[in-house]
Image (cartoon, rainbow, N blue to C red; front, side, top):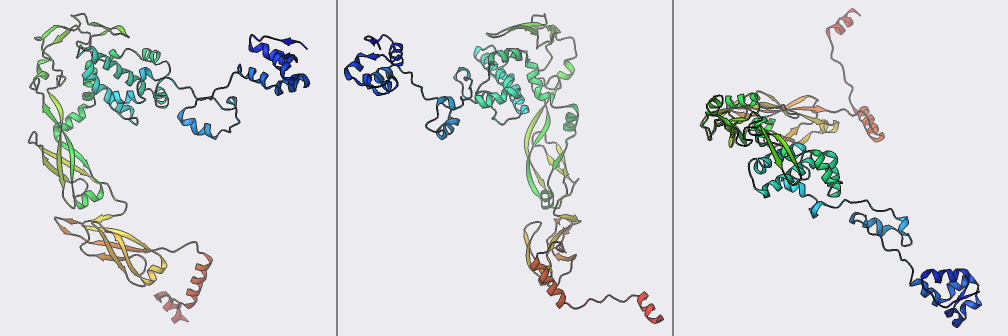
Length: 449
């Protein structure tokens, strides 16, 4: 045994106790001298206090809010190594809220790709650098492009929804491409491109389809719908379609100075792209109209009220007047068949199913009518496929009022319980025999005998 009078590090204390040496405190208390080496470490409270001052204590692991309940269910004696490490969460960019990119585009978290694309192009027309030179709007356009690139990528969108950010966001956005490659003309024509030539011809004809369900057409209704119509362009007064093909208004493009190329510089990107105004042709026509794209007209919307008369059928025509153009607009009704009602003229046909006891005993039943619930009375002993006529409960049209005809159908059970079978057997024993009606063949056979 040897004695250490001075401890300069925690290792000195531990090495002394492990080797079995005694300290000055052990000499004074005489605890460690009387015990073996192993008990000396546990018995001398002065030595243990000295060791505890240098112990590295395990801190309590931090959990995310969604794992706090799981951490509470863990036993108190579990060590940090026994608890799985939490999932890594990427830090949100610049302290933005979790749904920041959704708010930038003005859509909710459940928006479809088409809704996100439509929202982006609608905002791109307002904040595109070609239409404004404001630094603030340019920065906002970059945010729109970042949100568009992330939310239209299914993998990155899922990662963004779960973690509030994506890994290596800057590298991903640089790989996605320059957001300024989206030209102003492309953004402006996004909505107009969806209007095909067939749709334009249909708008010119002022004939549309109006889908209705069976009850709306049969009972009659009033529907507020959005009417699309063609309106003369107020910018060019409808003359751009003729003036745009003339060479009188041609002049060098002011945006690219007749080069057909434009250099775009931003804090993040710097590139040379085709001029979006002249589309690389180096010349523009001052007679071109950006509002209508040289069509001479634009598509407008107006809310109108369509009154569908009672008793309407599939293929009927309803005429209204456009409040803006004062032109007549024709709507052709598209009415599908009903799963419950059948219409024959102004009469309505339905089925009512009865069990054996209801058919034998009869009673009153509430059934679904065309306008309201009606009471149906079934006489005792009603046979299957018996028709009951409810007068005046059919279709009300200009030709008159029809009836509601109900066909009663008796259901014969296939699977009987033991008790039901016993009751049916008892009923069969109490029933009178059923005689078949005599035919001419049976009468001739009886005469021959």
